[in-house]
Amino acid sequence: MRGVVIASAAAALLCSQAQAADPKPLYFVVNGASDFWKAAEAGLKKAQTELPNYKLQIKYPEQSSAAIQNRLMDDLVASGAAGIMVSAVDPKTQTEELDKIGGQVTLFTTDSDAPKTKRVAYVGSSNIDAGKQAGSLMTKAMPNGGKCMGFVGLPGADNARERIDGIKDAIKGSKVDLVDVRADDIDQARAKRNVEDALTARPDITCMVGIYSYNTPQIYQAVKEAGKLGQITIVGFDEDPVTLGGVKEGTIVGTVVQQPYEWAYRGMKLMAKYIEGDKSDLPKDGLVIVPTKIIDKANVDAFAAELKQRQGK
Image 1 (cartoon, rainbow, N blue to C red):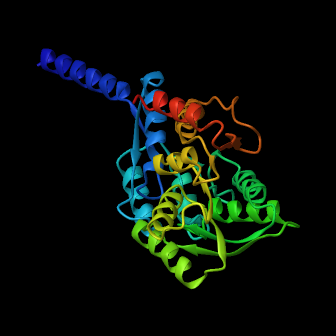
Image 2: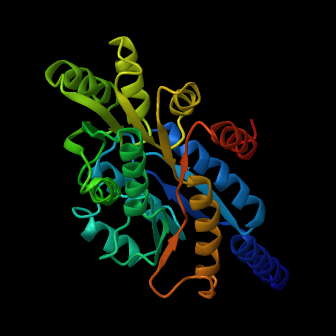
Image 3: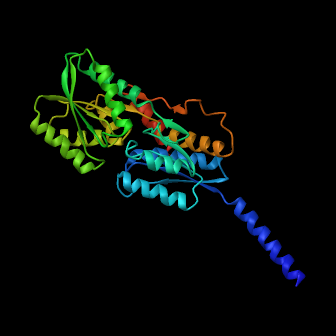
């Protein structure tokens, strides 16, 4: 009987040790399906090689919906998540949910911040600065002015609002006017229809700005099909291959790129250190800003090569 007790105790100890050795799950939750997040996947893969005590995964909600994203995060917490880094679909309406998540696990934000919640830190771009860079591309390309239409997925998200504010600030006092911004809720078919409708209803529009990563490719396709490439000034955000191709051929003036690879890579490493009690690399204001940069015809080839290398292509 004593041998059975000892064997049982030994088995329990081994089980306990095995459980202690299980990697802790950390999740990167995005706001919707988009090729933009492929770079973040590569950053996550790189971070995984340096964080053997954690299991890193990226999660895509079924739809770009705050309710669906909330449910996804609840499920991740219930399954044992140690930390979540999220690009919230609509931070303002998700405050209660983000506070709940932040009260249960370590919560970081990325891409679009939620500073009035229990999130520990934001790792991402200054979207206001990015908007200013886009505005500078617009004024440089149109010294005599023009009427511009913006296109975006989620106008209520901080990243969209701040980019638009940055654009408006940069074009203030110029002859360039941002007359409207049309939303599509991260529905790419709708994004293209918005451009097509604008081309038909607003012949006075001479400039289009794609504010989310997929918006610029949809602008490019719609303008191309309308036979107006070269007639409409196009400015974009992010590094979709269609966008970079348009920059290379000169039909897109330029694009303001972020670094989602760095968001994922640095964010996961910072989150792991925080969970382990090391806050030394986190600034007091909780803002870890990864700079954006302008890509135009002069540097697009070098940037595309760097992008392929990082993504292992």
